[in-house]
Length: 262
Image (cartoon, rainbow, N blue to C red; front, side):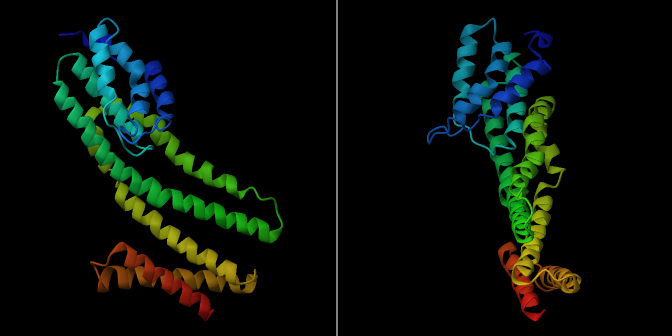
């Protein structure tokens, strides 16, 4: 049995892994997808685990080059958990096959949740908000600084999750997936999508109407009322099994009708 204290990763090693993980998709390929970036990211940790066992180090590096693919933002959680599994493997606590299966399962599970939250919800919201403020800046003749809001707002949420996930995942190991479920990722993503739809209707009204302070309050109130009615009445009471696409289509149609009426 290997001494566990000698294999425990320091925060400097984890920081090196976190920085390297930013280039996860730099060598994306059709065969292994993110595997080269993953192998490069975990290299500092593998050197720590097997610094006195060159044969085991070579095997660990080949193991890291197997197929790997997950959501880039949630990749930190997967990599951190994989490091904890590799640490247990280096101590002889778990077999190699078990560690590989857990990493593969975590990558797939967190890929689905990460895509739902960041690609399908958060990024469209940031892009729409940036576009709306850009259009407002152009319409009022002010400086067009708003496009910078898109990467700033997206990274404000994505970077702490991606970089901090290395430390969080390493601390919790495979249990990180259960903890992530407690954050209600799917529910948060749904509410961000609904907010995006509301913002779409609001910006549509601004695009079709003049900037009249007398009508602004009425237009905003109409959008809020129609959205609330569609969400509560149609979405929850009449059709509880209504699909998300049909649900959003109803909201957009309601906002369009509101625009025509006012």
